[in-house]
Image 1 (cartoon, rainbow, N blue to C red):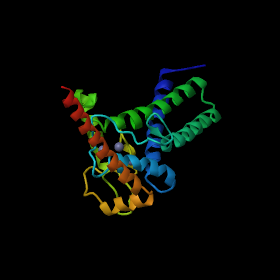
Image 2 (cartoon, rainbow, N blue to C red):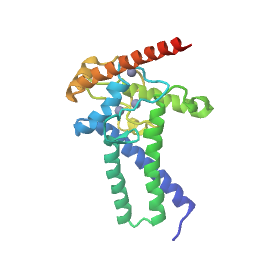
Image 3 (tube, protein in one colour):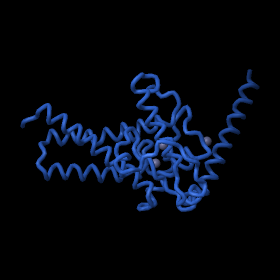
Image 4 (cartoon, rainbow, N blue to C red):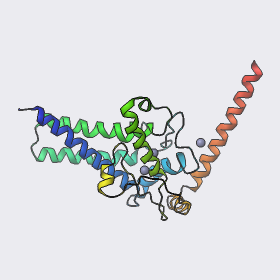
Length: 230
Ligand SMILES: [Zn+2]
Ligand SMILES: [Zn+2]
Ligand SMILES: [Zn+2]
């Protein structure tokens, strides 16, 4: 088999572009109402964990997958469609007679890139003091992408759908499909209520608030016992 440098670079570049394209559309799909069960999972991240009354960043990442189907902290709303997309790409390459080595390279990139961008990088956008903020060139790229993701979290339309900035690390498909927003807007509380109602997140909203105050109560109790022992 004939493997060339140009062939390897072309495979890597194509795979990254396809992965970004798929990530963009999957994220956009999760913000539509086509598959309500999948949307609900993603909106827990948006409305209950990093919601409008909550801070966008804490010292550690807060998972949105407790008591839900997930691998690590990645919910089934990302896993199931991703598996289908991967299988589809594999089938397409086999049909087109792509050499096996390029197939393996492409599949590794199609799996690795989204993990790096949509899982690793995304989660680091919700923690303070991420190492990239201390590295000169990476810093400006990361902070720009993070700001656009903050805007994504706060851009709900009046029907309760988030409609901007579906990329995570890169936003060229947002530019291309005209879903890019570069500045913050006033938060749409009417839209927020519509979304909370549509996915039955009211009870969970209460539970998450109760969870917060309970944690605070336990902390206080912990401090009391600690000080009593000294
Ligand atoms: Zn989102
Ligand atoms: Zn987020
Ligand atoms: Zn909290």
